Length: 35
Image (tube, rainbow, N blue to C red; front, side):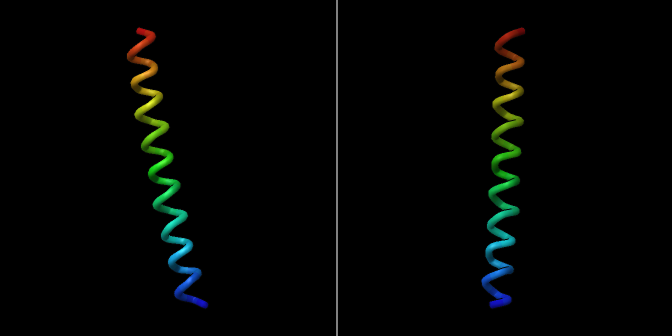
C-alpha cells in the first residue's frame, strides 16, 4: 500500500509541474502575442 501511495504522490507532483509549466508557457506566449 505504501508503494502505491508513493507512486500516486509522485504522479501528482509530475502532473502538477507539467500543468504549471504549460500554464506558464501559454501565459508567456499570450502576453507576447498581445504585446
